[in-house]
Every structure is written in structure tokens, then in C-alpha cells.
Image (cartoon, rainbow over all chains, first blue to last red; front, side, top):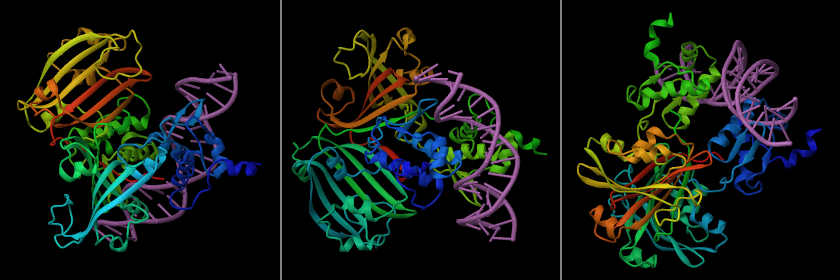
Amino acid sequence: MTATTLAMDGPELDGDGPLWLQIRRALAQPIVDGSWPPGTKIPAETELTERYGTSRMTINKALHSLAHDGLVERRRKRGTIVADRAQQHPVFEIWDVAEEVRRAGAIYAFNVYERDIVGVDSEHGRFTGVGAETRLLWLLVEHFSNGQPVQLEERLINLDAIPKAAKESFRKAAPSEWLLKHVPWTQAEHAILAREARGRTAKLLQLRPGSACLVVERQTWDGATPLTFARLWHPGEHHRLVGRFEPRKY
Amino acid sequence: MTATTLAMDGPELDGDGPLWLQIRRALAQPIVDGSWPPGTKIPAETELTERYGTSRMTINKALHSLAHDGLVERRRKRGTIVADRAQQHPVFEIWDVAEEVRRAGAIYAFNVYERDIVGVDSEHGRFTGVGAETRLLWLLVEHFSNGQPVQLEERLINLDAIPKAAKESFRKAAPSEWLLKHVPWTQAEHAILAREARGRTAKLLQLRPGSACLVVERQTWDGATPLTFARLWHPGEHHRLVGRFEPRKY
DNA sequence: CAGTGGTCTAGACCACCGC
DNA sequence: CGGTGGTCTAGACCACTGA
């Protein structure tokens, strides 16, 4: 009976990991890729119970988790619907400029100005937790939206942890995009600060020296192993990081 | 048998709301107030089952939720322990300068420079979602740590939603502290940006005009009702917003 | 009123991992 | 090996709220 509607109710499960996470992914995918725009009604729990052949508690855990992360809104009687801001990037996640620019409908481009292998003693960045003899790949990359600079990226990659990065040309995909696609991580840390653009930084971003920039410093780990450090400069006063949240529960 | 240890295992439940949230609060309180320092072992699920006279699924939901928010770490066999960073302020929550300063062991002070009742047409701030006839309380407040300026606060309060604010002197507690204590909210939105300090802003923060500042704009709602808007200026390059996080699940 | 999510139960099997 | 959390079930009653 339900067989005919299977293809409409979201992707199949991938068989990887706990059931409730599989279901979460299956439902999250059409939300984040836009197939289910905000306002779309998601089938009721009892219906999903049949759809995926599982108990209601398992479905509930998946939906509760999606609601907790703001992808859907749930109300009694009304049901579960895709949240208005489901596609908005939460501030404290790793997001990719390339994706951001393309999503806005602009033409994305990048340029690698510098590429070098350096030690941890270098004046580049503040990569914490790497040994003194660790070889690091240093990159200076600029990102453009319709030809306008939108981000200047200072990047350090731990070659002991990611040796294949040394052989990568970064012609097709920028380092950030390449890393997101090829390197799994388990922890990340952001620091957000304001700095004035000086010298080469100002020049590349086409800013008057002294202009205020929003800088994001980000380091990622895989377990205890530091993977990469990035300092991302965003020009001027127009760049905003936006986040929505709710009160703590205690 | 278990009666003798009851008092040691955390506060009693408050009877308010769902059981699992009560249990969550009961366990969270000693964590955030420091009674259970990082590393403290929390009783096993089966033990808490007896402690609170509930089923294991309910306990599990409370602990899972605490783990999700980074207050505890859980591992099979090792059990549940208070996380190292449990007391660290997550970036995307409402935090209070006063508390921040006191926590660092410094002397906190504040000064209210301006206080006025204005309309939404005013050039102050960008308070969204309030009607044209709404009366707003405007405040300009500066916060100090050991006498040094740490934050300049431009604040708008919706007097239709919070009429008692009009009668408040803000002598004992700064507006931000007072609001946190007296006004419940359900939604908040942050925007983080970099701006150059000019004119009075630079003067009050004791900065050279043109210095880069980290600005946080924050609006809170209670349901659909806008409560308050704040623009918080943080001096110079020394102020950082830090956050830790994990990969998305999809 | 009735559909939907919110919560809770009592039990089960399994996977991990420190002892 | 055995303690602990991870997950899952089948069912139950309740609370809210839109039609």
C-alpha cells in the first residue's frame, strides 16, 4: 500500500550508523538542498513509522534532533514543517565561501597567491598543538564573488596528518573546499575578532589601510590530532555572521 | 538502601515541566555552579533510574541532552563525566559582561550616559518587528573591568512588552543584567560584525578614531514579540568570541 | 473534537572498552 | 569479562491546538 509513495518521502536510508541518525540524514538532505522549501510539511510520526518500518520513538528521536538544530519546527496538531531559516548557515559551523557565493547566485573564483612548506616556528598563524618538527603546508588564497574580493584565507595544513595535501594542486577546488570534502574532522574551534587590514591584506581585499575587518580563526582536529588552521579575513563592515538560538535549559 | 546517598547526587526535582528536563536541570545545576568540577563522575543511568524513580529512557534523554550541549562527556564503560569546558561560555548564548568580568576576578562597574524614551523612527539602532507607535526606552551604557572600558552598549527596550522597565532606575544592576534576570525570552538572534569606532564611540572606549571594533547586535523575542535590541561595541583587537563545535550530522 | 506531537514505561540486545 | 552507554521496541496516556 505505501509502496507507491516511497520515492516521494525522502531519500532511502544509507545503512550507515544508528537508525535514528540515518532517518535524520534522510530527512535533512532534501531540506538543506532545497527540495523541501521552508513550510513544507513533513509526514507525521506515525506515517514515518510505516515508511521506515521502525518504532515511533526512533522517528521521534530523529525529528526531535532536527528540531533542536533548527531545521524544522514542530507543533502539536499542525505537525512538523521545514523551518524558515533551515538553509541559513548557522554561525558556528564550518561553512565554505565557495558554496556561500554560489548559493547567492554569484560567480565564484579563487586565486592561490602563495604556497610553501614551513615549520611550526614560522610567523604564519598560530597553529596550536603541533610538534616542533611537523611540516606544514602554507597557503594564501583569495576568494571572489563576481570578481569582488570576499575573503582572504591564510591557511596551514598539518602534512603529518594529511600527507596527500602536499600532492594536491588546488587548481580545481580551493583548499577549504578540498579539505571539507576529503578530510573528516571531529572537533573545531572558532575565534571571531575584529582587526584592521594593513599592507598586503588591505591591498588584496581592495581596502583602505586601517579598514575594519571581521576575522575568523578556525582550527580543526581529528580526535587529538590538529588538522588545519585558517585565518579568514572578511572585508569591511558589510560582512555579518548571524545566528539564532534559544535560552539555555537550566 | 539508596536513601543515604540521596542528598549527594544532586538537587531535588522542581516539579516544573517534563521529567527529563527536570532531571536535566537537577544535574546541570551543580555542573554550572562549580560544585561538580570537570572530571566528576555522574552516577550511571541505572543508578539514576533508582535515584529519581523513573525509567532508563527518561534518564538517557536528560543525559543525552547534556552531552549534546557539551556539559558532560559520555563513554561506554567509563560512564558520564563532567566536561572540561562545561563552564566555558558558549559564544552563541546570551552572556552578560558583568558576569564575565566578575568571573575573571576583576572589578565590574558600569555607567549610564543616556536615557530617553524614543519612537521606532529614531536613528537609534535597527529594532525590527516593532510597530510604528511603539514606545522604546533608549539607553547608552558603558561597562568597565578594573576601570578599563570593555563594552559600550546601545540598548533599546520595547516598553509595550516590558512596561516595568520604564520605572527601573538601573542603578544597582545594568540594563543587560536586569533584563536577563527579569524578562524571559524564547528566541534570540546575533549578528557579529567589525566596525570602526568613530566620534563618541571611540572617545568613550578610549580608542583612536578608526580603531577596529567587534560589534555584536542582538535582538530577543518572546514568541513573536520583540523585547529588546542591543548593539555591543568591544574595543580593539583583543576581544575574541570563541566557540567549539562538532560536525553537522548530515 | 480529533490529529499530532510530548512524554513515559519496562524491557531487550548489542557494542565498546577499561579492568 | 563485565559494567556502561547506545539503541530499539510496542504500547500507553496526555496536552495542545487547528479545523
